[in-house]
Length: 152
Ligand SMILES: [Zn+2]
View (tube, rainbow, N blue to C red):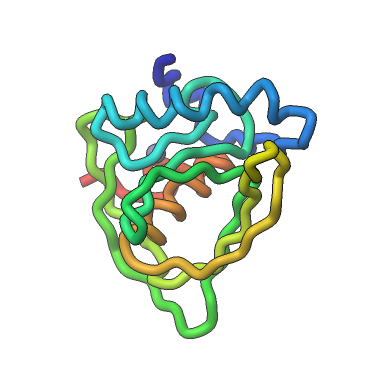
């Protein structure tokens, strides 16, 4: 597993994961978590390792566990505001970007049940976890800190 060149992740929309894709993707999840950890990352999207699917893993700072998100989308909830955040990305090693994030977002995604069935979830996220999830969900749509943020 290795990080692909950044021109292979920018402005490229990933494809939805269907139930029939799950058996081939499921074995990669633990490897993605271990790979992200080995790079001191807090999230990793499949497209960053050359798999153009709406799939990522991210550390949940609210629950202190790594979680898997299939087919995720986010939108700001009413009353949320934006803040400027400094972020890095495993696809841009050693660089820091300034980027606007929402403080409260509604996220919809699919989780795997213990039987390996995609099951829809919706939840409001705040703070650092919400910020990480926005970063990773942006990857699903080919949006990165380099395409949307400002190098500092
Ligand atoms: Zn990233």
